[in-house]
Image 1 (cartoon, one colour):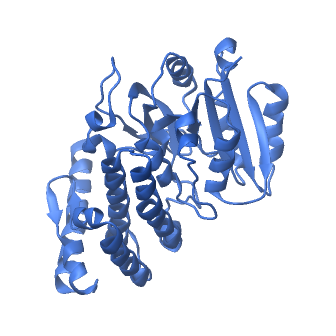
Image 2 (cartoon, rainbow, N blue to C red):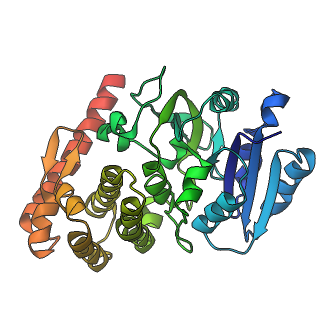
Image 3 (cartoon, rainbow, N blue to C red):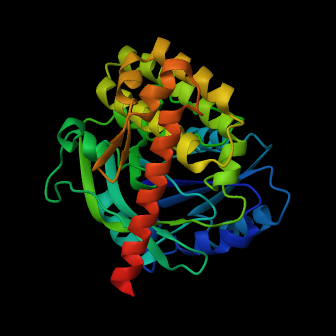
Length: 353
């Protein structure tokens, strides 16, 4: 039977979480399950991840396929999966995450009925105990397809790689290739590939369950600060390569510009308000100069830090005057931000107390 959906699972030393991840894909409807292809890409793992994945391949040989390869980091797994996928659509699932199995069955049925370029679905963040921390929902048409421009920039900013499912042939037409050897390339997955999408559909339910709080996770602030150079390399690829490819293939360049600005903003925000030190100062300055030269639109969009849509701090604009992050105004902005965070936390506790 032809495969409707290929799921690529990049896997490196995830034996603790992999069974839960793979179990979440096994739906009761066997006929529908047979339309699914799961590619578990073992990225040179040194634990029992490969052995676990092979158990599922042995039990469900028409659904699961294990690809053992040398370590090349996240992007190399996506590239290998995209190369070998046979499904009409393709979606990525990280090995420490999982799907809501019941909703995934409905999602697979929904995907089977569609002929669009991209399908968007809701997601939630969960902790180690599978408790919901926050749900991300979209304000999109549910009864008809829509274009990327109709979706609008406010919804663009809410996109995570966990929310999207692409038509496989669209990515192959532009020879999409994700940066290898670094982490954080999930950001690339929602940049150029999304720009290939002219017709989209929305599945208004949570499918993806994104684990947060795991020790060593790349989104952990300390890990992120230590590996910021990798994030920056990925962003530079989006600025130079993705933008030129978008122009070459007449893709949605406005979306690419918006995605680049969103990612740059996240880096600036983390540097000023999340990171504990300024050890990446020279690296961030170098990035900012690169953005100014290569992406004036992004440079213009990233002058301000916005807090909860009400408070707007020109902290980046001030910083750009001489790249001194210890100037009086920047210190004042940081103090105001921290005070607002504490006040909102207090009000939340008071309200629920």
